[in-house]
Image 1 (cartoon, rainbow, N blue to C red):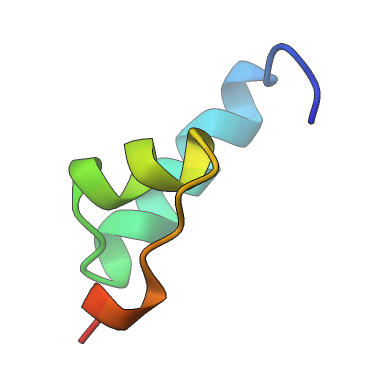
Image 2: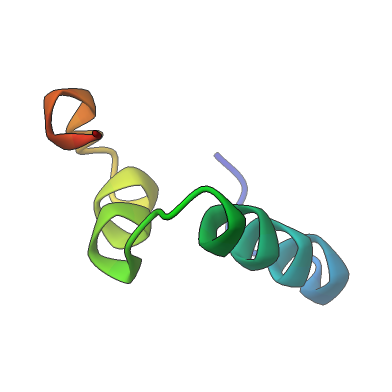
Length: 41
């Protein structure tokens, strides 16, 4: 995984996450490499 993300890329990711009802906590977990798929409704 790269050390940084492009700001535009990050904004798109956040908009996509919000659209899909993903919580900030889930995004953090995903970024940290702990993707809790079973918690996704």
